[in-house]
Length: 476
Ligand code: HEM
Image (tube, rainbow, N blue to C red; front, side, top):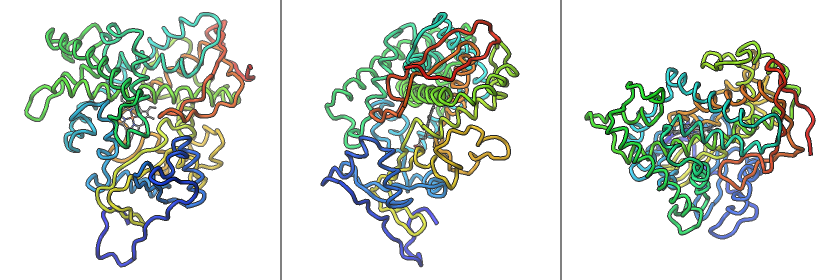
């Protein structure tokens, strides 16, 4: 049984067990959690079980694990478990009155305005942009060389996200500064933000400067587009399918255009939600593939069979790349870009025999849940075939939660998968790759843990377009 606590319950509810171990007054387990949240939660679960309580910077936290608990958390009414109250530290990124800073009904309406930008028809237009950007980026690599895989994926997804979400004018205005600006936005998410995202920390100041710079550029573009009447449906040189166009066409329930601040906040929020997360998923997809070269031959065969040598990469073709999709999903499972998801209990929340008191931060973890042997066989093993017909381990409800679940499940998942598949389809067909000697552990010093730097790849252009990428040995 889950939901608000019922006073007439016959079984006596219990508080979740408190975690022992090294903890400081008020700080609680903040040092261990901040150092490596995944290792901390995995070890703690091993000791304390699927539900336990601990403290982070004076904030009581309850961690829950397992498909049933995750379903309960994702499906709880927002008056019981609130994403809004949990993610308030994002307000400096989204802006006042936008997304988590809006009332739940208003946030739903705002997210609803984004949906036309991620429909199948729009994904078709995005596919073209994604392929063009990937071909141009890797085309500039030349015959052979060395690159950092994480930096590569970051640069490329900055270009794709900017064009598909903000529109080409923003790229022209901010140009080479964009990667640094996006990085400063993401790096402004810190544990200290739970306390107060307005603290005078250098990371928060850089976050605010980046937000202001992107906001200014967007305000200029919006004013231009509004004054030239370039609204969606009105072709704008093939670029009218971006998310900015979608939001300029959106109407409030009383028929008015969305305020500029809402459009700007939502777009910056989408960049924040979708760019670096996609870069990290693309990087892990590569690291895992290149360290398990035995999985490459069937991928080459799939590329040859679906897209052949030249493309273009359409949505139907990308959908037929099932095996590539399993590899992306296996990267999502083993290294989910968001390692913890949170809600704030506004009322007592009951799960099974446990009751989580109002005021607690409720936490679930894709990184912990994805390694449960009760759901995923041999969970630490890289095994993309676990998603093949007949096994389909991902179909256990609320077990694979790299994109969340329930009402607040990620709206950009199809976009993100399409982007990562496009990037790897181009790379697999164009280059022979080797990954630098490992290990390549996750870097938990950032909010979205990427493979630790340096994560070098050596590349050599395939002599003939038909020749598949080959890679096996690592270089040092
Ligand atoms: C690999 C890339 C991505 C990952 C791993 C990811 C992950 C997630 C997760 C876990 C959530 C749920 C958060 C929660 O319940 O607490 C979420 C929500 C969301 N994501 Fe993504 N995301 C990705 C890409 C994107 C992209 C590309 C976009 C937009 C184009 C996007 C937009 C959103 C939005 C708007 C929400 C909030 C939905 C709501 O609260 O109703 N995401 N994402």
